[in-house]
Image 1 (spheres, one colour):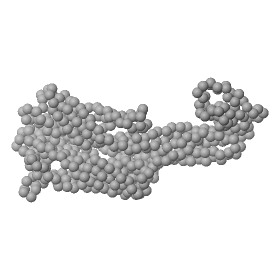
Image 2 (tube, helix red, strand yellow; image 1 turned 60 degrees about the vertical axis):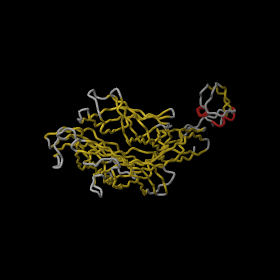
Image 3 (cartoon, one colour; image 1 turned 135 degrees about the vertical axis):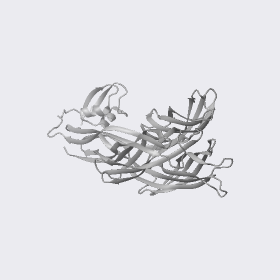
Image 4 (cartoon, one colour; image 1 turned 180 degrees about the vertical axis):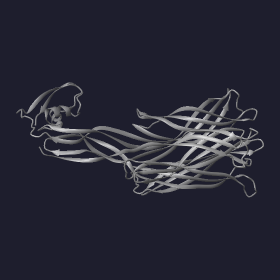
Length: 508
């Protein structure tokens, strides 16, 4: 029996690499001469940041800096001091094979950090962080798309897929000189700074993407070194950038991520000689990953009315990116304060991370974990540091099968209430890539049995007693005829029977 088989490589997003590079941090640090002695260490943070990457054949290198920041109390234990330093690192990954136009995602996270003062002027720091590399690329899964021939019948599925199409990134700098604001006292020294880039809009054009966003700044400073009095100021700096993306068009989907690479924020004097200005120089990187979607027909079953047919099948799974959603959410927590009490909250900030995504029933949910960090002052005026963990769940109207999410803290605040309670309010920007997942058994090879022919019964019809739930396709396949003929002979419009029935099956 002769028939024509047309095969096709279905585009799928294939994982190429997924692994970590663990980086230890072991160092001694001596305070600069201008810093006062250490009476007590309040908090030590370790922040690794990937600055750039290079792809050369099967090798990917990530260059970055890790920043160590220490908050401590000076000799009077009333004034908070801050000291920080950074060191470079390089992580190198070897891929098993070279890939074309890969989607490369490099992230760095802190595993742990410990810090102790070995003397009033020196610190011993131990910690670790990990650099994670995930690489995906467009792959081809060879399956049969159609079969043409006399008395050959096929059943097909239409599958949707999304694959990486292009990637671009652009580092840029946001610089500004800001005033502390009316009513704010002069600044003597900065304690802690936050610089969070927030994406507000992305407009796609031919070969270009225009992004707009805001750099949100929050700075805590000492206004009086003799008493340790503190002040907070917040600012927003708008920015926009044009990214060149070869091949970009309005049919593609794009996911934009903004990362802070470095932040140089320091106090400056105004024309009157007053320390009332903040000089801001923040280096950001805009990264855009573009995806191309499409559909294809895939043969999932086939048979012949004339002779037996051998089929080979394999599982095929495709992921279709439905949309990239960005939502601002508010998480509220109520925390029990320590028994010795708090008279004033000096500063509060949060670190968040996603734990698990859940999809189903036309909705999705994100489980996350939050580390709440707080500098406070007791009734005696002494400064203390507290931190607590809290779990939270966010619900969304995303009708999808799979979700990949990112969390960014854009604001955090608190209120002291009665009963030794602290009410915390955290604003999060939640980015979600929502996917529909399709799975099927696809036919990848098909051949007729040599010298095999079904015997001719000489009958034109066959009586078949079908049960509820049986498939007309399977009935036609077992009787070596077409499903369309069975449906036409019996006046049926659905493939699956909803009741028991006696069918007249036309024989080819």
